[in-house]
Amino acid sequence: MELAELVGLRPVPGAGLLLTLTRRCPLSCAHCSTSSTMAGEEPDGSHLLRFLGTFTAEDRPELVMLTGGEPLLRPELAAECAATARAAGTRTALLSGMFFAREGRIPARILRAVTAADHFSASLDAFHEREVSRAEVFRAVHRVLDAGVPASFHLTGTGAGDPYLAEVTAAIRREFDDRVPMLVNEVRAVGRAAGWAAAGRTAAAADPDRALPCAMAAWPVVAFDGTVLACCNQQAVDRRPAPAHLRLGHIAEDDWATVRSRTLASPVLRLIRAVGPAHLYARYGPGAAPAGYCAGCRDLPGHPAVTAGAVRDGAGPVGELLDREAARIQYQAGPVELVGRHGCAAYAPLVDLPRTRPAAVGGGPR
Ligand code: SF4
Figure 1 (cartoon, helix red, strand yellow):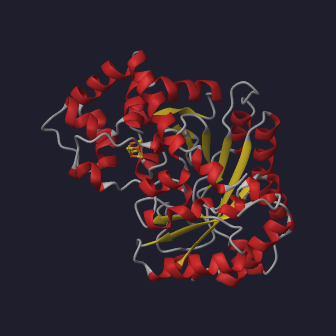
Figure 2 (cartoon, rainbow, N blue to C red; figure 1 turned 90 degrees about the horizontal axis):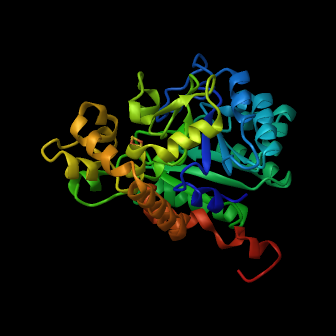
């Protein structure tokens, strides 16, 4: 599975599940929004496997993304999660900070976890490079590709003008001959555990009348304590009690069918996905100006009039139709457009390099 397919599914409700294997991480990157250390919490492995075991061929996500912290601190569990998901037909992607690359080789138990997945993504940025060298990361990614697993880089910088991003993207293109795509994000209030998130949209605050769909409310997220949330915004993931409209359940009690049906049927989530929280305030609570796009969303329980308006309009067939149409339009627009809105727009085309498309595999036109 290539990066473009994976990112392309991001706006489709219930098409993916972000699963946090651990909050722990042996690296100490300065920008880590999950504040990961080796003392962080971890969800119970048996609960995770039980939850994945409730996938069926008829009702399952297309993709499970294993994140952390550093998911490869639990390599046996990562491999078991991938195998359990695959039994129902679900594919798996792994996102790693590459701590193991410092050993100069991939330890066997980690390679087993990597090859159990359908996609491998390596985090790389100026902060990571102080912990693990670029040469070590490149060597490890070559080994992943040699093992037959499609790979990508998840890069973070300060924005389009960041010289680091210009230099590292050029280096990756040279090193891997355009066979390893890249997802480029800007440093925001999210980290590698929320690999596909981008949550600091100021455009909505400047123009609240404009509908700005939130694709980040499409995939459920299993947090460090087993709580299942509707989005990967780190402050939403960490807040307890979780805002009621963002809490979908818990892996110890609920199954996938229940979590998916709550994702799809919630009137508030439907409208967040279709028009975004700033538009909800403009429509149902003029004067209750949100402090920001995601802050407004997290604070919805404190604005009952806005929530009541969203429940009223999102509950029926119109809400369902709006949600479905917003997802269809974003899916059809494709991964480059999505990253242009949610990531670093200047580098969005790198998510879908022509040489990683299926036609190129058989030697087709490039
Ligand atoms: S708008 Fe709400 S659902 Fe979307 S990323 Fe922000 S907090 Fe999450």
